[in-house]
Image 1: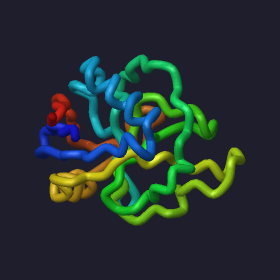
Image 2: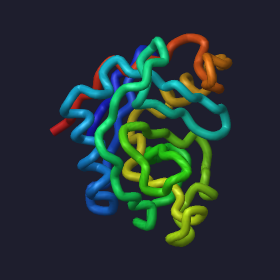
Image 3: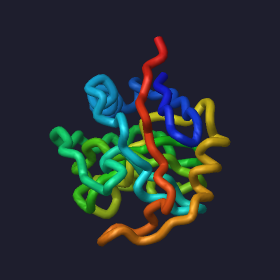
Length: 164
């Protein structure tokens, strides 16, 4: 289990290393390296998800490690309260960014091993702090440069701790 310590409160995640071993190992490497410290939730869409793990408060994108293989075919679903890897249109492009589903987003689930069917890999779920996620999803958002849905008040991940 890991806890995201944010300026809105703590969000504790139970990671599923059994169903998403490569993804959890990838995420934990970023946690252990302190990569997520002082990053922000840079994309918030009420009714959909909150995304973070790649930008600093000044919208500087952090340099990430190599992409991880998409494990979305693990049987886990993008339902409310789950955490999944963000990626580009390339199914196997996930690096550091993740999102927490604030709705049942089953349309993001794996359907087939095609570029449109891969989906987004769920690798855990919020076990404490869903109220914090609810507070974050309600923030006012706007545009910053080419980025949309950016919180007007920074939602900062101060640091991440690991529970034994």
